[in-house]
Every structure is written in C-alpha cells, then in structure tokens.
Length: 438
Picture 1 (cartoon, rainbow, N blue to C red):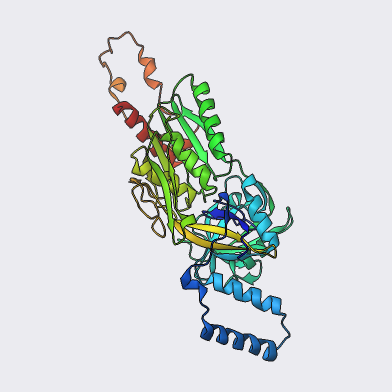
Picture 2 (picture 1 turned 120 degrees about the horizontal axis):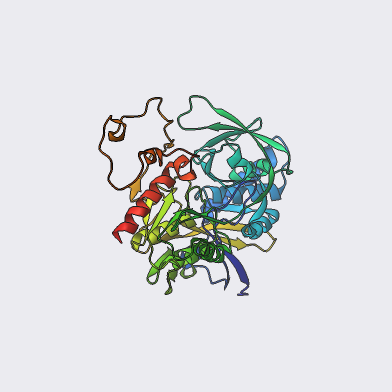
C-alpha cells in the first residue's frame, strides 16, 4: 500500500469570528497507518441503502443536483452527526485554518459553536468588533441578518458572518436574563489579536491577560513578566493570570504557559483510539515568578487551551482558580488533508489534567466561585459618619500629627480598574492575603 505523509493539525477549539481558524492547533507529520481491522470490512447493507437514496435524489428531486454536491453533503452530514467540532473543510477553509494562528484575520471577533441548532458564542475576543458591540459568552445567535440560523450548518453560518471589512451584519441574539431577543449590529473588521497584555495593578502585584493562545504566546508571556519585574524594580509578590473569555488556541502555547509557572510534573495528556493521538507533556525546571502566588481568573468563556492551563495549575496546587465554571471543551481535533485539497477535521482524542480529570462537557470548577456582579465605589455620603476626631474636646493623638490629617485617605479619586472589575478586585485582595501568609 502506498503510504503518504499527512499534515496533522490537532485543534483544541476554533475561532469562528468569520471563518474556521486554528484556535488550538499543533502542527505535526505522520505516515498513514493501515486501517484497523474493525473498519476494513465494508457495511454492504448500509452502503446499498445509501446508493438507493443517492439514486432517488438524482432521479426524482425537483431540481437537478450534481454528484459532487450530493457526495460533499453526505460527508458533511456524516461528520456533523459525530460531535459539534468534527467537520468537512473546503480548500479555502483549510487554508484559513492553517493561517489562523498568526493573530490577524478578518471577521467579527467571536468564537462560536453549535448548540441545539443555534450558534452559541463561546467568547468574544478582546478588542474586536464583537466585544465592542457587547456580545457575551453564552449568547445564542438565532438570526444572521434576516436568515434564521436553525437548520444551518456551522460552516454555512460562518460563511454568512464573513464579509468585507467595514460592512455590517445584524445578529439577533437570545441572552439569559433578557425577556426578549437582542438585535446587535456589528461592523466587520480585520481582527488583530494581541495574545498577552500586562500591567502592574499596584506595587509588587502584576496582571497578565491572555486573550488567546497563539504560536508565540509562551515567549510573549516571558517578555511581559520581564517587563513587569523591570517596572516593579524587583520580583513580584503575586500575579493575576486572566483567562476569562479566552476561547483557546495552540496546544503547545498552553503547555508553555503552564510550564512557565511549574518546575516539574505532568501538564496535560491526551488519549484516543489510535496510538498517534496519545501525547504527554511535562514541565521543565524554572518558575518565572519564583513561586509567588497566582490567582487564575476563568469564566464560562474560558475554553480548551485555557482549561489546560487552569487545570494544570490547579492540580499542582500552584494557583488558586477563581471565577465561574469554564466552558468544558476537552476534546482534540485532527485535521486530515485529502487528495483534492480539502480536509476533514475529526475529533480523535480527549485531553486530561495531570490528575486524570477529563474536562470534556464538565469544565474546570473554580476553587473560589464568584457571581457575575459589578463592584462600584459608593458615592461620598452627604453626611459623613461621626468619628472620635469629630467630638468636641477629644483627646489628641499624642504622636504629634495634626488633626487636619484626619481627612486624608478617604478613598476619593478615580475608580481603579480592579474596582470596576469585581473578579479582578477579589483576585488582587486574595493575592495580598496569600503574600502576607507566605
């Protein structure tokens, strides 16, 4: 049997802002092996039924249909029946998939999947039209412009969402907690995703935001931490790692990020029916923040590669996971190119955390659960509460300070980001407590 090498792309989720792209891929090559014995024999009865239906459509359908259209439709249906992530890719979609880890593509800036015949938003991507328009994780898209989504394949829906940058698309969205559908207009744009953002929340405490896992995310994280240390004037006492609304990305990037905070042990492993689907990734020595406490923020939009990082740090007790239960995508897809330039994206394995937990359809349970609330500073009361210093003839402090100092530190001023962002505020508070204990 002639053997040929196939390029494999193991995907852990896929960004579908406007097309299928590699959110969660690892490039590898392998030689095709012989088919297992249980798939070498053909199911002749079922194939006879297939050819009968094929013939009926060719002969009796109201319009003439080409053989190519019927056979491609059969392949799409066969894959769609397996799970939400297996699919048939045209040549154009396959090329876009391979190019999707560059961090720049055209579209709306959302990762989506199928649920009960509707398009479900896994997460909007940072600094994209979808995020600016207010799209949220968990939104169900029921109409694209005037076309109902029900009955469409995910690929068909993605084709409609694609378009020229600057053009508009109107999404009809059902959102939990809303009594009626929302109509959201989004202007398409070239999406440029910055994988890692960082800043000092305050002296000694850093903030790292990973919006998606791309091929250079691991190196970008190292650079960001080095910059934070330089700005801080020394080592950090704690870090908040924000993985909220991160739909996933390149598997190797998730491994590199986990490895950056671990000194030893298993990070993630995968298991499937074929030998090539079994992989194990282990940490190497050196923790880039020298064991300082970490709080990882996750929510329902944290999927795939994000769950690998959160699961690894949680199992090794290297970080405290805070927020909401994650999305729960724990399967691996392999992209198998075909001879005519198209490809099949097929689920071939599940991945597991170091302790052997499967995240598939379960997600990561946070150590500290947070409700979806928004923290606001209270406006200064018209009448401030009376304190000892306000009482007539009160005793002086005795330390030489003027009573006028009592007005200082009343909390006035602009709201910081951690005040506006409740989970981030809680994460910073927890970090400070952990630092004191350490």
